[in-house]
Length: 363
Image (cartoon, rainbow, N blue to C red; front, top):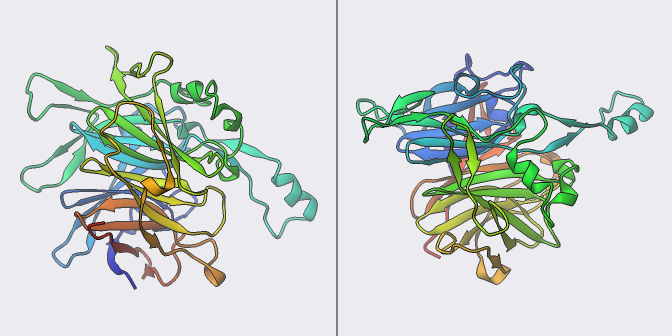
């Protein structure tokens, strides 16, 4: 049994329009000081919890992304935030960019259930790669989001929220992927069918690494690398990284697993990896040593990745539950993992949930 930490959410901030609780769809996690930042895949908010004296996280505060960014859809359409990172006083976030296939519902007729599986939907707000200024309050130690704020170390410089150019059906990143020799064939396939699906973001300096849950190519997962630049209007563009394109692709042999989360620790990258499709399967944490040292595209074979540990997942009666989605670095030897669709054993009362703390060792 792994060590666990309780995450305590406020009942006043935790339900979306459909009544789903934030603890039931956690999709990414990031620790900044004593603040644990989380997102739920069916909301347009980012959640902040604070470490309490007893080691739990509480004092829930919710930030509505609409207040900081011009989202393509203003109707609370979900962003499906699947990755967060921080660099240079900016909180970065990325949506899944994926399509959804409708689920059949058992009460419906057979014909209707079959018909539902043919329907594919796009959520406009999923096409989001953006940054929001984040500043730490020296008095409380808490980090807070701002639409625009003075740089804390450079008084004459302003930090302002911005996002990659896009609309309700695509953005600059997906436009590039539609021309990519490896990814283009998967752009019109739903994420849970091994289509294009972002689930992970990590930052090193100006470099942003984007983990793909799909597609997985003959067992190989992919990490995209980009370097956004801001224009005079605050819109983000992508710096040219090679002679041919403004991004790099890194291929990692995770033996069929897709990427669920990325985190950089020192020069290494931790990868939370699991099934790309909607099924129960092994979820594990890997270390890609010296991942950020190079400035070229990389092909990383399985024996060049360290498999650090497995992560619990639902099986049997709990099939489809306890899907590890978020990974936060606690220290050199421990990480915190949060889960989508938690089991009843993981939930506490009406508003709290247990996260797992896993020891990685020195490796």
